[in-house]
Length: 608
Ligand SMILES: Cc1cc2nc3c(=O)[nH]c(=O)nc-3n(C[C@H](O)[C@H](O)[C@H](O)COP(=O)(O)OP(=O)(O)OC[C@H]3O[C@@H](n4cnc5c(N)ncnc54)[C@H](O)[C@@H]3O)c2cc1C
Ligand code: SF4
Ligand code: SF4
Image (tube, rainbow, N blue to C red; front, top):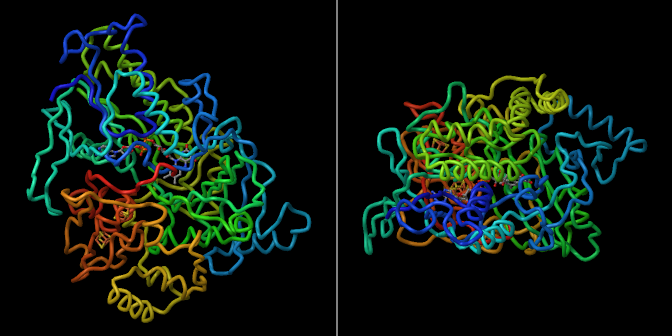
């Protein structure tokens, strides 16, 4: 099939691209702005493929300054978008450890003792300190609280109503078609295969879609972005070693929860000092609540689900959540390398936008606005080239798209953020001071060092728990859990004093119930497994088996001969296994022993 422009993924970046482009392909009199090269007489043919089973099945917080969104929709009334509200209050809260189970440095313990001792003089309540001030680089005042799912469904409807663009959900792109140094389009995923990708009943090879321009906005763990990174390499000095796994719930708050819609709480300090949390109140007594488990958290027990439950149970948050009900649940990784993770943004026949192009700002905790804006910048560049009848070459895209991007606030703020989190490589306190310094000096001062990949950072379980759990006990617990084919984190955490979760069947539900109730996870048959363990001998030898501990959907479990097993039916496509794996590939130490490929299915919720 031949089209003019083919697009991969429908997240905020593509929302910005298609919103801007779709409005400009026809002149006010209804005639094409320029003629399609593949369908004479018609406007350029634009097709977008999204792998999830429907539009808006992505996961995000989301609180945003919404500069890009408001520029695209100057008349925007948040009431048009379900779950959206203007920000009404914003607080930054340090959560102390009410249980004594969290792994805190002596500096933090001393700080906690001091805060507790002076609690009468401080804004201290429910074991938490409300900071009197939110630094400028962090606050989102004037912005919006949103649900990414609802936003993308609304944007999808706006784009499709223009009638100039097609969006196909449930259609994963399998690979980019690369001819020499040029991207010539995409190949959709084969259907009718077994899990090992062998043709089976009803085999249908993936359709080749040729296009003059391929736009890649497949997010932080996108397979097409990865393919291009492997083929074209990364710019010198760039790498993608900073990321976080974000896990969230959408909750019906109990009656009496007196949080005004638009209330935003950012938390840090608990359940482990490295874990950040968010609590955003939507209209109708609904909230989005969640945590981020960052790449620099040096724990081989990286279970976001269990940590999320302990976070919700913190007295400061539980007073709002107790009696609430789970509506929706999900998780996804966030690429936090920012500008340092930027790949080549354009080449012959292709351009990259959004988080996979290094747009996310880790200092501001903001990705949506940046992703959207890079999409808008590319659309403006595309219109300029179409009108000038110039081809989509690397040079032309650099002179139009890159020029706009380099001159914009996305670039300027990205520079300030570039090294702002490097302090976390040395510890939480250094990290927090480093963020503040970088933010307040506009990036002139930063602390810490260049991030290192997971295999150089992660201690073994025995090292991590030294002084808390004897190595022999770890060995015994490991054997017991492997025999039951379950992860090890619950057993280890409970040995360290974390109490069992008091499941209530409403909000505090088991991980398996979250898949069914909150995520409604599904995997259509007839597709190959998208998570692959590349070198099985590396897995057999691997001491951390961190892919099992970190899996957001309990889709990876202990398997025979020390090699984990993958269950596609439980996978929510969060990408945590891809980033967390602790064994580098022999031929590319920047990539780990898990391949994350294109696949359909996953979460079935547009509320996240
Ligand atoms: C829990 C959580 C909370 C967050 N909170 C905030 C917040 O409060 N504020 C904020 O600004 N940002 C927040 N973010 C970050 C924000 O969500 C991202 O920065 C933003 O979504 C990036 O947009 P994108 O379009 O680049 O990528 P994505 O949103 O990742 O979209 C990429 C799309 O491509 C699709 N895709 C991938 N591969 C293929 C393929 N092979 N074929 C077809 N389609 C494919 C995916 O399904 C997806 O829909 C949060 C993220 C998470 C996970
Ligand atoms: S996938 Fe990675 S983390 Fe998991 S067992 Fe294999 S090598 Fe270890
Ligand atoms: S297997 Fe699926 S659910 Fe589990 S970590 Fe990997 S992508 Fe996430």
